[in-house]
Length: 163
Image (cartoon, rainbow, N blue to C red; front, side, top):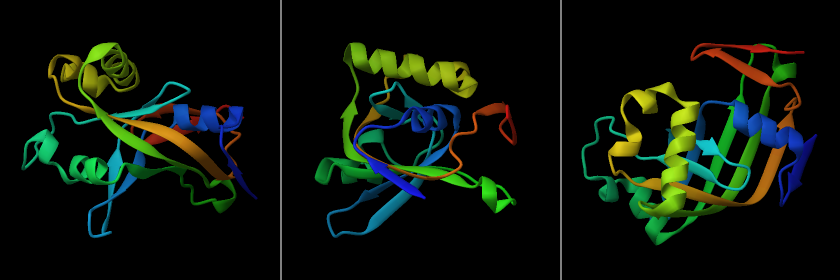
């Protein structure tokens, strides 16, 4: 059964906060979609996804995702969980509006949250790089499947449930 609401349920919040990867969709000026995997942090109100120092072909503000957001700030984020046992599959889709932040208290807090969630960001010293962060302001949450089972991440390649 699919659930759709303006504010996330407690189960959706837990699911969003315990997953490690999502996909973000943006649209360019001609309507062509772009979907990218993202790392993110969710503070209960907003989703933050950084531009990190992994190799890029262009400057941060020239990345297609950033240019798309400037042209059309409407985005969708898909956070899902897959298992071979399809009774355990689940997802949350978040529709929202995105803005790019690169300074101020909220920017610093977003970097702190991202560093807490991902050791890789701590090691690359993300908070010292001055790179922008995409802030997503959710306006709709859609969920499906068994999102109620809390996921504890053991490693990047395996999970365990505390059923």
